[in-house]
Amino acid sequence: MNTAPHASFLGLDVTLIGTLLAAMATLAVLVAIYAAATSRDPMAKRVKALNERREQLKLGITASTSKRRVKLNARSEATDRMRSALGSLKVLQDSQLKEAQTKLMQAGIRTKDAAVAVIFARMAGPLILGTIVILGVYVLGWFPAWGPLKRYGLVAATLILSYKGPDIWLKNKITKRSAEIRKGLPDALDLLVICAEAGLTVDAAFGRVSRELGKAYPELGDECMLTAIELGFLSERRQAFENLASRVALDAVRGVVTTMIQTEKYGTPLASALRVLSAEFRNERMMRAEEKAARLPAIMTVPLIVFILPVLFVVILGPAACSISSAMSSGKMS
Image (cartoon, rainbow, N blue to C red; front, top):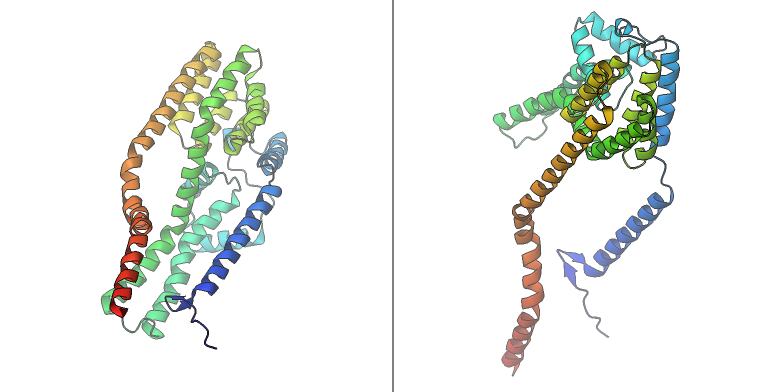
């Protein structure tokens, strides 16, 4: 008894392909169920970090601008080694370290030792990866079919990317974090207006905003809680607002900070000023949404042509093509 041959696609059995796709879909569903069942509070880790920050402020580690350069006594051995290596090569400058710390704070990383790691990665990345690629291409004979220009391009691209890699990673994190904070800023200002009209102090208002918006906007809740802590412990309230502006790479936050400083200095009504800023930020958010909606037809043109139209052609013309093919084959047989 002859068995019918199995259908194949690109040399693979269709039954095997369907089984693999079904297994992948089942695995994706299980992963989604597990992720939904084990969801954690996004503010739990941040609240723990902020409590540690509170203890540091109680000890006076970062109490004023004159003591910013005071270093924590507890440092890891790996950081000490990196620091000593950079110091021996005389490539660790105070301005470079301060710039890296500012970018790390804007990315939500407040460990000062991470700045040393970023600077060390800039130096060690090209040395390690560049050496590996150079040895592999020119000594071990990788890519023998490539010409000299392609090999040189590979080495140059490796050196450039390994040097710019930490900066690209930091810039990506800063952009994503700033976008998340920008989304929740109008809601935070509305809550600040309500708190100010209810008679709460500024630090209590920031703490309330952090508790209310922490789950919806964890990054914004983190910054509000840290600002509330600094307002309660720093000797100068102006410094707490300036720290908020330096930690968030947004012009909108700088505008809010300027408004808060002016109200603290001149005694102007806080609620009215924040209400105006909130309306302005909401209008900007609506304009950004309208801009994205206006760009959507142009963005969807290429996926529509590449992915959707061929499927429609197959669905619409496929049955007709099968009927014509079967009719022609039956005519030839007769």
